[in-house]
Image (cartoon, rainbow, N blue to C red; front, top):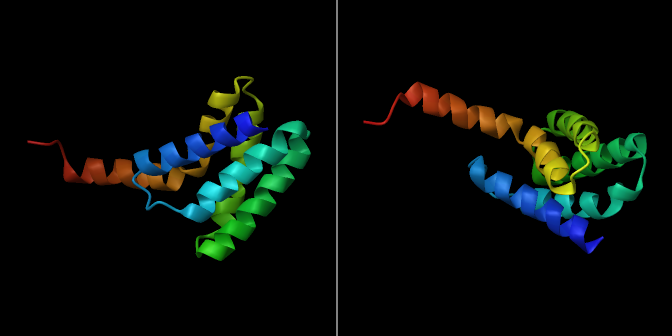
Length: 115
């Protein structure tokens, strides 16, 4: 369990920093909690739990609950298809960070190439 929590926290923290999202401690804690609880569950139960945790965290942190919950469900499903626990966690967290990643890419495109 400690290994899974460490992987979940590492993936979430790394992707928050890489995507230039303002660091969110609620999300960071959510990643550790979900990573500790869900690996022993079936896919459907893991999706339900992750979506529930995501909804609670989103409401507590003032984020967009519907967006965050949907991305958590899709991320959990996609992550369940990867057998490597590190890649699975990175994929799941990466999907949940899509709004931040697309914002970053759009800013880079609109600013043009660096001179």
